[in-house]
Length: 79
Ligand SMILES: [Zn+2]
Image: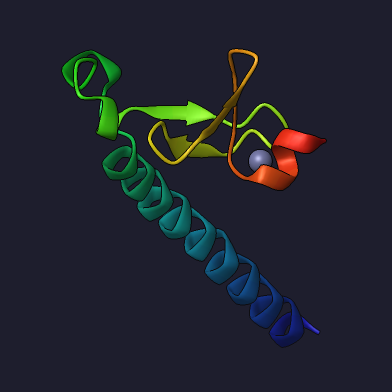
């Protein structure tokens, strides 16, 4: 029984650690993906806008603008 609990604890510790590592790398990746806004304000091609429908960030040049709102695709602009 103690052996079973030890194995269970090891599995739990492994998943907890994996989750922490995953979150750390995900955070770093997101930081690289979205540079601070104040440094790239004047560069329109680098500016990201949020889709009004699905909340996805897309470059402003690729976004579809309808009534001063931005959308990631034609489908979402219609909805
Ligand atoms: Zn969208």
